[in-house]
Image (cartoon, rainbow, N blue to C red; front, side):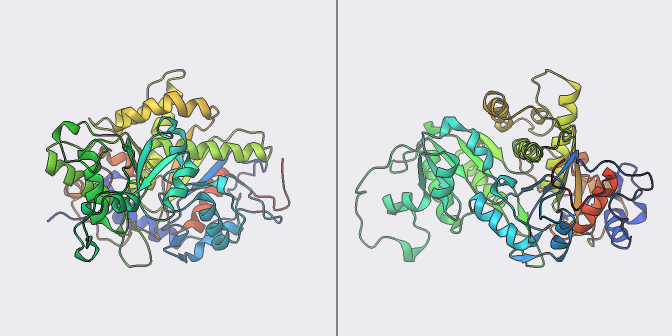
Length: 454
């Protein structure tokens, strides 16, 4: 039987893990008294930050709707006496069921610190850059205010699964109680659907799976019969690849990545062909980290911090999304810095395998993304794993680590190749408060609580 295992000890790359691997590191960190911010024994630097924080939300700051106690404690160290942030902060979440402003309001309430929507990156945020689809009729799948989200992102003709079902009621037949009592032809014909946008996991999976397959197999005309000539299918853009996420339950819950696995396998079972993605967004995609870095630099500019932001610290609870994504972006930054002026893209080389999704993403980045974002200044992105969410430091680590590598189940998306180095965190801490202490120490940063701008 295959087992889901924590990071094997043999992947720690020379870190002083000792005999207990990541579990030992996490537990050992819990017993250490963190030094005061800036107290590293070698003096302190001026209070101008050259680093920024990228915080995951679920499993780091909250579990479901319940705040994690360390979160407010951590953010008290991140603001001055006027309530202004001392360091640039962006919240990077794979959630996609609400608008950025609503998520910012939720975070302000939880953390006791004013948060603006410009500090929030949702899994769907990069869709604002995919302008070639904005004028097309697109089918959107997920939950929450889907039409509002789609229109906020720039889509002019979004259609929801509910609208599609109401127009073609004979398509949704799994739930007997929802089957139409009287058969009738559609009163109006919908425009041809030219793309499918997957925002997040829906409520009625069977309905969404059926109708999305109908759209793909009819070339965007679900009122017509399926036909094999519809391959290659119309473009599919997907946000949030999390297989699982951590809420109040004792074990992780299904995420949108699980829904995508269902869709991919149904499509392949019916057609014999792979479902292709035009783009994949949300962590661990490079697009998401590039946009987050841009927001970090904008914050620094607004505060008149003259020194460039050089290092990002990505704090998360999920090896397969938070840690993988941060390390993948760090690898991209290293490649970019070693190839000044080159248009080569590291993600297509290290993560995409043989599929075409990241090639399409690279085209979109080269022609749109980089044209709209200012040149990057960041040279590294460091990953910090906390033990309050999906990652479980108490899972037993087998004695034979060579066996554990072959038995480890990769929870990342199928279009991202499994690379053990990419799920190796730079640092492991008990919680987000310990993460802030650690990063202040690493940066030798001593916050001046009375400082507003520099």
